[in-house]
Every structure is written in C-alpha cells, then in structure tokens.
Length: 153
Image 1 (cartoon, rainbow, N blue to C red):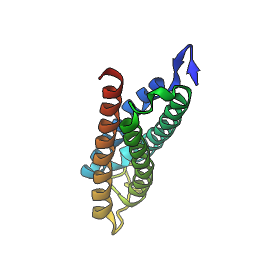
Image 2: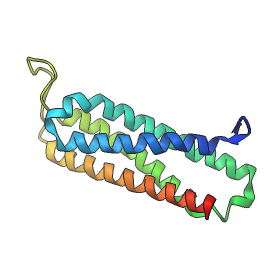
Image 3: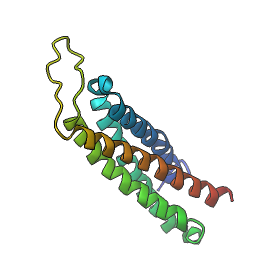
C-alpha cells in the first residue's frame, strides 16, 4: 500500500515511534507516583491501545511492503523479527495498562476522593506495569534501530 507514492510502512512507523514511548512513560509514572494515578488512568489505557493499534498496522504494512518488494527480504529480516516482537509486547502492554487502571488506586481528582480504591494487587501490578513499560521501550528501540540499519546501512 502506498500514499502519494510513499509506502505506508514508513508513515505508520512514525505513529509507533511517538505513541509507544508516550504510553511507556505514562505507565512508568502511573506505577511510580500514586498521587497522579487518578489523572493518568485513562490516558495510559488510551495511549497503550493507540500504540498497539499503530504497531499492528506497522507490522501489517511492513508485510505488504515486503510482498511488493521481495528483494528487501534478506535486508529487513532482523527488523521484521524485532517489529513482530514489539507488536506482541505492545498488545501485552494493553492488558497490563487495563489491569493497572483497575487495580491501582490513587487520590481522586474529586474533592471527596470517591472513586479511588486500592486493591491488594497494587504493588505486584505496579511492578508488572513498570516491567512492561521498560519492555515496550526496549522493543521500540530494537525495532527502530534495526529498521534504520536496514535502510541506511
């Protein structure tokens, strides 16, 4: 697929490069700063879903690009593997962010504090969210770096 003669893949990748680190950094802050949890709960979930959707579209558009230009196969093999791993991590991060939005309480933005709750899973979920965020950052870096090496040498 192309847009004005430019393959869709490099265009979609820019969304992943912006959304995935934002989702990961939001998750790290959500896990580490309890007083901001109420404020970050829904932005975390929305960013995680958007990053996962963009990563799915990026891997699919990469496959379309490879189908239209099979001579790129040997050059982008490592990038393809890292991209698929990143997509899977991003999909898993959606689950972790939804779990964190449910399980991690925090002071409410409301004066009454209603709506804030802490479950007994708070610390393990915060640790899982932080590990998932770091994994997302690492896989975005690996996929991006291998893609840059494939294109620019």
